[in-house]
Length: 380
Image (cartoon, rainbow, N blue to C red):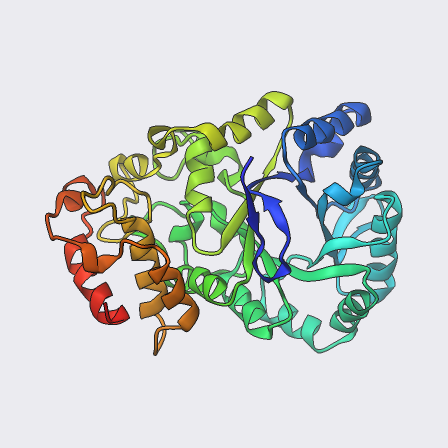
């Protein structure tokens, strides 16, 4: 298992994580053993947005004796009322629900205290100008929440979160289908309306990913499989099916993305996800699926897929392109980006303009020209 630093939290998390939302639909002991199996395989981050007692009890029992080796995303604002989930900012429900989370998880702290599910600007303003955010800061000041995070499906809200400076990481929905859609305050809309042809990643999402990378705000990923639709040719908005490994690789190649939290029903599904760690470049190749799809192909946009390899000068072209995109989005090149770029060793200055990479690029990116622009931008 590979581990990465989750932005400014400093936590070293597994790049394949555990999304807990399916736990309640299995017998308790079965789900407890599923979490334990994932942990044995190296998974060390788990998300608990679910307010129902069964799911919380399962996670708490699974972590007994090894709590300190888990990183928990626990949500503030996810409550259980009259036997069902309710997202709320009403403190008479918020506080008891969070206290219940601690009790059922058998812990006195949450590693990543998530401001739960903020997709609208009205909701954002309510949270940031009331008792809710005061409570979050109070929990943080007391050490009950070690780091403050937020979950959202809307890149506009994500950008507002980055700008606060105190939100250290974000749980965000990333997959090739969502990335083509403009921001919306309605998550249901993200699962439909793909009849029109799309040509690449929505600019608002590109900007959000870049802001996360630039500000060291780590991203954990939800809905990486598009609710399973991208694994099914008939339901996929692309008209073709992806594999789990391809979708994991897509998410993990977005700027700022650190860990994908997958929902599991079985140990086989855990094994399938963690097989990503030993998968070949061919198995990870999502680009050929997108470019050959009957609908919604990208064009002229670098997706950092790595098809451009190998380079005769050993340039990591995808990373050079990523740093170019990060730097060109700013009025001046940030020093941190400049240092990361120089640390590559072989950079755009080493390009000999052979264009062998362009012949392999499935999206028709003019790589040689981008290398010249990169040199000009970084002064190499």
